[in-house]
Image (spheres, rainbow over the protein chains, first blue to last red):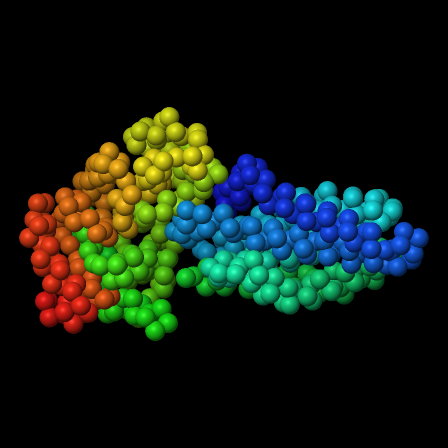
Length: 219
Length: 244
């Protein structure tokens, strides 16, 4: 599995395609939405967590689409499927790679989000980090699975969000709710129900992905 | 000798299309078998079924004595597929690709094995260039190194000579013949009869997904075989069945 993750990182270090698109779209979304609210209005602060997650969703969907695309060139997916591994292992490795790429993008996006919305730096980082980690893991779990499903479809760029976003909406609702409450000053315990929901979503989709990836990539 | 590949009542259906229809055969360990048939006869599907890339609709497949339905990872440890596509990542170098596949197969002392293959296949000057920049012949040599990295017992070759120049064809032929001499079982689908006859000792003919003929072949016999082949593959499966 480590060989699979290392291979994806090697390709990314060379091409920088996924990280560049994740960052560019994430930052652009953030920038545009930060100008949508009056700087003096209270609405701006209330909308901030939603803006952050919208940028995560837009950029993440694009990154997810890219993540399996290089397996199509030279039919490399068949090379992977011919490895003496359980196909679920390939899914876990791909999910881990997507999680790492999204996390790296957020390392840059979150400080800029804090800057655009004039939020307290360390307080926001400490409060948003657990939600982001859990949310990104769930997003990577469901996104990788549906990226595999849409890989062999003709309109895969359209198919991925169409298939994934409705199913991922509980994850995003929980993540936005948890982020909003934490950033408004509530303690971690007060949002434990939302965090539990995100964690349950993560576990369910990691298990479903592990079990069904073989069928998802089948011709 | 036991069977390296054993198919029993094998069928594969894609929607309404029956791509492989009730194929049963045994290929002995160490055999070199050419798989002939017109486009759409089911050759690639049959190879992919044997290589666990597809699941049969009906029937069973055993490769190296292992059931492909229940022992997929163990089967894949013993096989390799060389197809028209290289399965190599264009943005990685030949060495990086080979190291990656070697690690997937947990090859011992993988770096030394990669170096040895690169030298054997004449890739030294190109080993550190991204695969994207290699010519078709060099790409196929890298793909050959990929399939040999874990010393498979069974090699599935799907149109391996397509698009290669004469020099590259010669190299590929000599490496495959050498693998066969060392005991590797070869199953090669091809339209190129001279190549099939020079490398293989027996042949199968698929027509409309059915096994229309199987038997021994000898180098140089392909001109006389061509008439038989055309009779077997003319029209539909009934023609093939009648010829059998």
